[in-house]
Image (cartoon, rainbow, N blue to C red):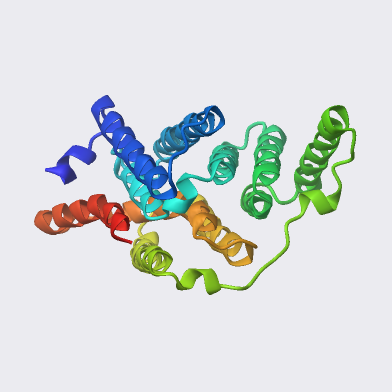
Length: 306
């Protein structure tokens, strides 16, 4: 049974999920149309790496910080949620930015042990700064760093300045790169993307389906998560609050994104997978759980119908 299989953390679990994700990635490129050109093949290979590696990093993060039990439900949900956003799987910018944000999350959560705080704040901010070069509005996740500072060590004023220093350094290095290779400055107009609150692109049936499924999962998973929150130990609650902040920021990024084709919602998948694991780890009817997991596995394939 799938519920029993994914409740464990063995190499075969990771292989199975990686193969499942590769199948979803193949479907995404099939729908977009594959061009057998060297540049496109290189982008596909890069996309595979930036899709699979963050999955492994996410699994490491949740187990290292005791956010879930030692199973693979989280990365299964991550694969399912990303699979309903097929446009994002062919957008290398989104995949790179999301992977870097997850790497930044790792440093944010490590602030809990109160060691080398400034280095961890700087590293997290640096990851988010680099992510913003790939997809500008991922810079919104810098607020996750500020929230972490607020939760773990707010009295040291230097901690509030470090993220700004890291972002300034990223901008300076970007200028050095463009001056060296393009003989021009990396201006703010090149860097900052516009804001758009137009959602007309969501009216297509495939996009409506993706958003509908994602919205239902968000409402349901978050409700279960908040109900279970009061039962968690005090030392884990700040990290759980950060997961909620992570999800809220991800939704905000999707709202302000200039080009809305559902790929901008990709950032919601990591926090939502973590939050949704609370539901799958709840003790309830095994048959119902088994049916739920099978539904999660097969829903992305229905995108082929659109």
